[in-house]
Image (cartoon, rainbow, N blue to C red; front, side, top):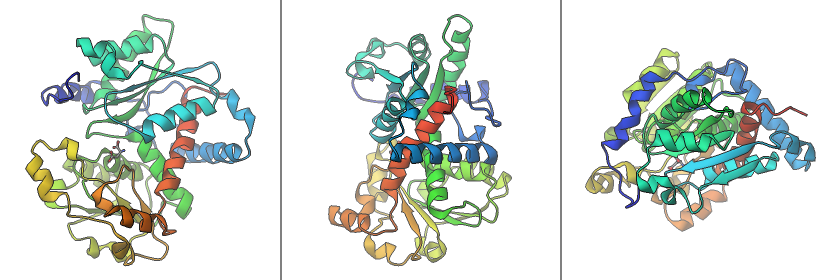
Length: 357
Ligand code: ASP
């Protein structure tokens, strides 16, 4: 952490918590639950969250000050061991719009006791002694499971009952991104059922696509097809493929975008995750395989939506291509970004048990 390099042995330390800790199902009741995997949600839970998000968005538009009641007196801590713009700031903005407060380590986690070598289990429990909810982003797969495990132990010793919400655990999952993504699809298309959805790019390392694909399966979408477009080296991991197939969702895998582009209702473009490659040459060899440009988008349906979790780099062409794509009414990534704050407001209000006024 202190010198900016990642020890790849450490990356595996948290993985054992994937089998040690089972996250609670939401089953219609969000209050007091950690949010660490999309596997916690089902179609009914998602409908509750969509309705809450729509209500919050409507009231934000009307500058309804009643929203301030929802998390007043509650404290959220941000604990980000990896870079973030949208997740970090939208969570902070969400908590403040709801009337809650936010704390973070002064000058970032690199200047906290992590610098002295403190492990995640101890750091998370320290933060849990002060905050009601911790938003955690960490490079280890399973880190949010580890945090939930230790916070549950802490609950037996202290007055506070802290929760953790995952802001992304390495190449594992990014559940709140998937919640805002599925909400944005619903918002734009008014349904999830019957859609042809194409995920493109680094499906191997992209935690957003792992979570989104699994969440569409959790929604038990009817007659929905998922297309995974990636070079062989960056294919969707087997465990995610198996999970989706078990839920009965139709899946196509291809390395040729044009096999599926003409049929697609939702395109979800992604960045090649340079920071996850062990060998820079293999990143260089693959980084330009899929580039979205206005010429590519011209071959898609008139009513397609183009999504991207962002940040974007050359996978959306040059800065001039960015501008041209942004001007196309089919691109929705800014809407997606704003929805991120509304969905996180709904989620925070729900898990913290804010009285819906
Ligand atoms: N912001 C997203 C994430 O944290 C996507 C990305 O970084 O490419 O996973």
